[in-house]
Image (cartoon, rainbow, N blue to C red; front, side, top):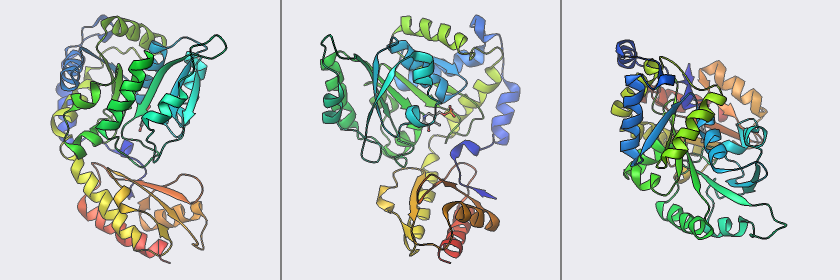
Length: 343
Ligand SMILES: *Cc1c(COP(=O)(O)O)cnc(C)c1O
């Protein structure tokens, strides 16, 4: 089966499993797991931040960040199709007690002008804006990369209003691989940022929440405990993360090439609507118009031929390339798309 549903489906490689099996461990709630500590130091150095905290998921990293920067009854600016809006079970409202102020972006990217317009006035009737969240790359936007210049200008707007910024960087390594910009060039504009080790990087579990402010780190550790994310001998998981940081960043470019290849082939199918130039990284979003089968039946027909993708609402579909998709599988997926969607 050629599984293009998500880059979360990757399995640890043999070499990664060996690194996990060899990991030195301790109790991380006591701060005594040497492998977790090493991963945290590595990530903090890589992103130019003072501290990194290992957490079980990207959702937890984002939710700790929202909680760190806000009080109940305050407002967070976020793009309308953001992971924080769509895929975190309303945690910002349920756990942090904040209201999300959606701004609709272009392929998930919002402008400094939109952010400026969304900041609430500091007067007694208005809810207070206390955090701005960006997502890079933007998952539902189609793996879209934020231009660094746009981030810089949004940061200037935020600074003028004294509002901190959080980056949902679950997929930031894809932006880093595609642009070859140093990780810190993105990270420097955010008070907190999260990155996932379990997406394109291929680790089985884990995210990191990074920051400069050590009082935030202390608070984040307590919140991680509150949210049930404090782990014990988690060095076994951290070892996979270290292996991924050392070996799997550069190869993300291969996934991006495969995604482009899929997009170009899809473009040749009459029922498919797609702009291959919009495929920045490893996510391919396309529409199928006027096919005899309904979206879920298309997914089933592709599955029967050996390709798994997701229907994501309306006429839209999403295919994601990753570590476990070879060049040969990409070629085969192209053939299957042509056969099923061109039918
Ligand atoms: C995957 C993802 C997350 C976190 O997902 P988890 O499944 O909780 O690890 C957060 N943000 C974005 C943009 C993602 O793609």
